[in-house]
Image (cartoon, one colour):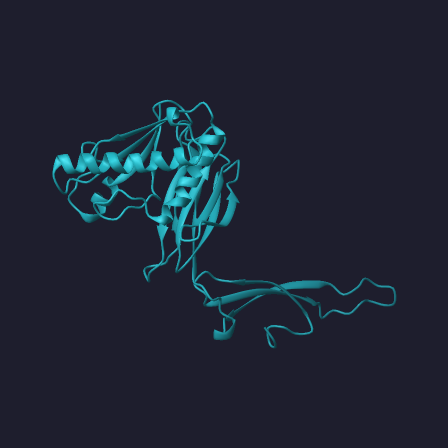
Length: 267
């Protein structure tokens, strides 16, 4: 960083805020007091905190924000330890792996602008939680709070798979769906006795017959991928429900997006 941030004193612990504007660091320096007589105690060392405006040449190449929250058992509502992993869905690369605090359930995960992310929270004997964040384009990029509730692996429990992608009125899986699909394969390998239903759901745009067929074919596309990668077909069932099981009213674009989904249900 150079002078005046780096000096002959001991500077350390450089930290840059998530908006890339302010930097902070600590400086350990000798006290102004002199030892009292020969053989006296050495000068005391004090630590000071300094802040500065980050110069353009030192700013991070990416703007970052973060998700911060707690992980809970969905049944008991008690905080719990869980693995929180973040993948870049365009490359299927694991970009971050943190663990929530076993006592408080707290976690913090960093997200960078210009990327599309899949985030998964998982723990032993619990269903994985699938979350999606699209920061590929310019948008509001503020930190946010996100509490996560994990359901046990138990018959009847279900989870929405938020990182499976299809073109409008199409049932072919987009390439960036492979991140979610590969996590599903890992889940099925971990729980060898589990059987699941992959269910497809749509919004209410279009005819009932067309929506039913589309939801069925999307669910079948997911099952086909799993079986092609070693999951036994006898453990899988594909089912389409069309618009019959909407999560909310189909009165806005946002609510229709929620209703267009693929779910995993333990049989």
